[in-house]
Length: 468
Ligand code: AMP
Ligand code: ZN
Image (cartoon, rainbow, N blue to C red; front, side, top):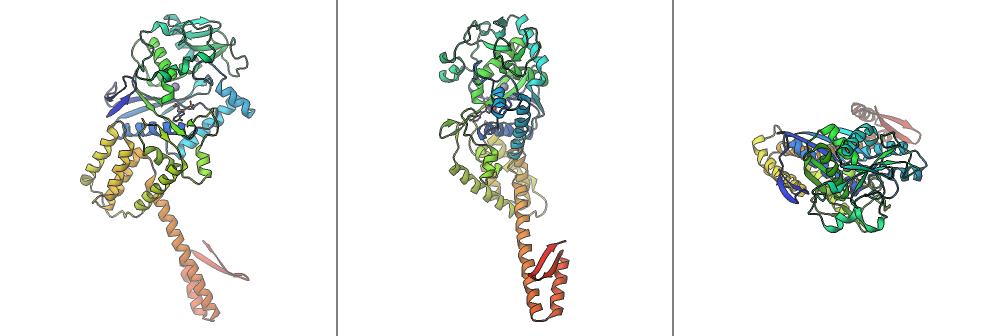
């Protein structure tokens, strides 16, 4: 498989550390609000990557954190704590907020057929690991104490800006002049590993540490959680592109300083979902959620389909007009699948060429829109319906569009409609027979209905029926 790697800025052949095994880490949600459909674009594309690696035969371990502490409103070390802001907004405790929005995240992810990673770890469960890691960084001379906080010393690294291919503007996000530089820092790019009471007095969640009562910085949690569960060598690290700097850059700095060797070989970044105002973001408000789409009558899987039709490395512009087009295309796909008859065994030899083009698409830097084209080619193909159904189920192990389930539901609903029409017709005929005093015929029809599992009762307002 060829993947674009932000580290190096080129498409590269994917080779894991250990043959046949992939260790993958995903930056999880900051659970102070609902995930918006932009966040979920990132999780959908990461889900496709994970499922494709499994489809290609790898044994995958995927780890994800839940950011329930430490993420400040700027991706650098400034601003209010996002969790605290969420708790204040809703007059709840930080833990209540975290619990509520973690559940909401997995409920939304489930509706989009996003698989839950093998390991999901909230940051607040790993304080001893953060403390151990920070301790070693201090001992090794990579971190220092200043003004009550512990900072990572970026001047100790030969190359801090590892994603050298990123543009100047992206690199400056975390070190803007106007964010009120922290005077404790020795270098502008240094970042906090541990905050103590010297900062953010009203912080709700704090823990004892060798450096005082306090709480971890945001970046340390992903390094420590990844190393805890996936070990010293990570194959793929994923996230939205906004995380590349400073978050992922800082993760690399502290993980490699801690481990003493290279940590992760491939960095997979998903470009943003944009709306009219630019990047969809939680802090800007007015964002779209899965529940809002549902309230407007959209099937969440139509949104998944929308995401699959564009490449993860291109920004994606959301509009309801585009989503409506996808809904139509999705419904047509379901109708075509519903028309297929399971007519015997699938022809596996004939299926192979379709599987090859599906793999070719995804092997080329996860080209999901071409994988969807491969799906259309199956429907158009000169192969049996059984082979088509086999391939659709096979591709859905990766695409997870739920096409077969949706087609079954559609068929069941139309069978149900046809049944209801038939029952009503028989009841009308029975009423006619009774009006003509043809009691024998009326009884015969009642028996036919009974055979169909329907009983009819005559009331003063006419006959009513129910299924038994
Ligand atoms: P957060 O919950 O803010 O920590 O973000 C969760 C994930 O969503 C991270 O990987 C972000 O990089 C990603 N993300 C944030 N905004 C967008 C967006 N507009 N489009 C795509 N991904 C995003
Ligand atoms: Zn992270």
